Length: 371
Image (cartoon, rainbow, N blue to C red):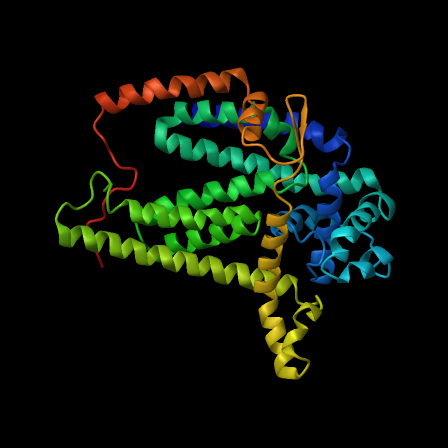
């Protein structure tokens, strides 16, 4: 029976690959892909993060690995590159630079195709983990139900293989949350390192993934008022249980911080540090500027991301000069299948019935060892 579930899951992922593969080959390049594709190429070729600073670099780098291996052509004497050295110049130059890389200096069809292939792979990997984790929580048929909902969602089929940041951040957020639960189940070194690395990948995929930090703190604090089923009941044992896992959580956050810093240090190695010239031009100052560049670039990107939101909105036939609170709920309903919406509606009464009839069991059981 287990092999049947695996075969069915593989068939569902194959179906998604075929459907989403049509977008890889036939859909014309989108607006954001122009900037992301060109920026990713420059990150790998030049170790310079000046382009497209409003989004972190990891998804763009993953997308263009096949292009760089295949020898994508670029011209770093182009005005679109030289003009982009300033903090505001790169926000203008990234578009002309990306247009030249994707559509002028290289064959547009093969360039776009090979940049989308890693994104398609990440979309299928996300589907695999949806099935795997859902199976652990709700059994193999529950895993197949969740996978079926995922592979039939139009938004994932259409946008998954595009060179965007959305699917990568969803994948790494899912892995971060699951590894966080694993860490609280068993606060071993392997688990807090896994949590830290996945957390780093999430914040390197999209800036708002930093909200996971506050989610972890909120969960940690919630244990004082809402203890989990199965944890020690005596005060000393409960404090030891929380302390051991809290320490592992902070170690994981430290791993994430170091990993993100090293990532930015490597890929900004050749980027001029003129934006930090306030520290001077002596050799100790130049070393300091180089060491501060990763933190400065990341925080500057967060600032640019924050200033660019909210944006003008078009929804339900109306234009708004600002963001509206109902935009995402409306888009969620419009872009979801009716079957998935029905599943959500049925989940509420089913959860209520299950809670009344089944004994509460924690997904994070207590560990008998406190050292």
